[in-house]
Amino acid sequence: IHGVGRITAIELMSTMPELGSMSGKQAASLAGLAPHPRDSGSLSRKRFIRPGRRNAKTILFMAALTAARSKSRLGDFYRNLVERGKRKIVAITALMRKIIVIANARIRDMKIQQQS
Image (cartoon, rainbow, N blue to C red; front, side):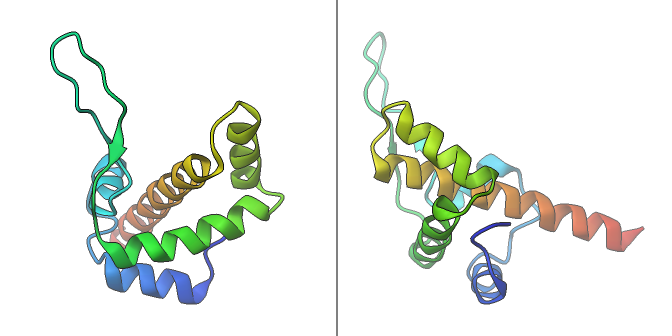
C-alpha cells in the first residue's frame, strides 16, 4: 500500500491486532475513522468521526500524508477529492479510512491464503 512502509505496518499491527478478522467498516470504526450519523427524524446533521484508537489514527495520518503526495491511485483519490471541493483535512481523513480498509482486506486475504 502506498504510504505504508515496514515500520508503519508493524506499528499498525501492534496497535490493531484485530485487523483481518473484521469487515472494513468495523476496522474503520475501531480506528476512529468511520463517519457516525447524528440524525433524528427528518433532521440530518453533519457526520463526524468518533474517537477510536489514538495511536492508530496517528500512524494512519502519516501514512495518508505520504500516500497523498504519491503518484498512485491513493494520491489520485486524494487529489480528486480536493478538486471536487472537499477540505484537505477531510480528504486526508477519507484517505486514512481507505488505507485501513485496504490493509484489513490484505491481511484477511493473507490469512486465508496461509490456511490453504
